[in-house]
Image (tube, rainbow, N blue to C red; front, side, top):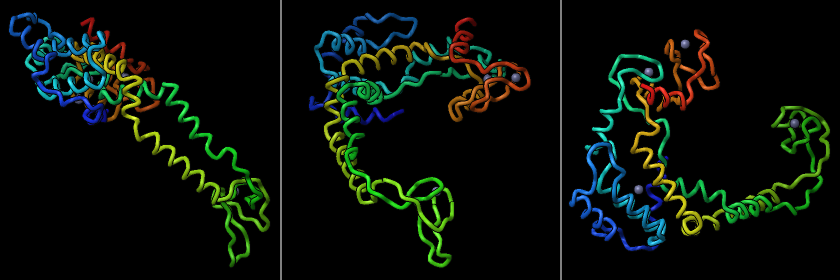
Length: 293
Ligand SMILES: [Zn+2]
Ligand SMILES: [Zn+2]
Ligand SMILES: [Zn+2]
Ligand SMILES: [Zn+2]
C-alpha cells in the first residue's frame, strides 16, 4: 500500500518542510557531536525527535507527516542506507527459513508490510463515530421511499423481466425462467432507484470534500505515532526472515507459502502439504526459525 505517500503532501496548511527545520538541525548537531552509537542500526534520530515532539504536543500530526516526508526524501529508501546493508548482512542466514533450501543467494524477507501514513490514518478514521455516522446516514438514504406494485418473475420474484414479442412470452434475465403471466411484487421503480443512487453518490462526494483535514484532525496524532512505531520495527528487521529467491518470489507475487520438507507450494485455501502432511508455516513460525537460528 503506497497511497499514503501522496496524501501527506496535501495535508494541512503548514509551511513546506525544510531541512533547516529546528527539529532536523538539532538532530544533525547531536549526530555531529557523536551522540549516535555505532553497532546495531539505530532508529534514525530525526524520527525519534519527531516522535518526541508529537508526544509533547509540540507539532501537529500534519506537520509531523511533512517532516517525516522531508526526512524520507532526504535519506531515500532504507535499503540504500549503509547501516541497513550492514544490518542485513549480519542477519541473513545460510538456509531458507521456509523451505530449508541451502541454495543461495538469500534475501531478508519482510513478512509484514509497511503501509503509507495515509493508510494508517484511514484505518483509524473508519473506526471513528463521525465516519460511521456518515456511512450509516448514506445507507439510510431512500429507506423511506414507498415501493410500488410491479410485474416480476414468478420463479425468483425479481423485476428483471422482459416481454418477447415474437414468442409472446416473458423471460427473466436473472434466472432465465420463461413464463406467460408475470406475478406482482412490491418494489421500487427504476426512477426511484436512480434517484436514491444519485442522492447516495452526492452524499459520498460531499463527505470526501474535507475528508483529509477531518480525518487528520481526529486520528492523525495516533496514526503518525503508530506509523513511527511500525517503521521502528521495520528498520529493526523485527518481522524479517531469511528466504531463498523462490520463496521470496512466491510470497511477494502470489502470496503463497511453501512446505518446509519438500518445497511444495501451498495454493490459497490449502493448509497441508499433500505429500508430507506438513501444515503451512505461520508467520510466527517463520520468524521464530529466524530468531532461533
Ligand atoms: Zn512520505
Ligand atoms: Zn525457500
Ligand atoms: Zn427469475
Ligand atoms: Zn511437503
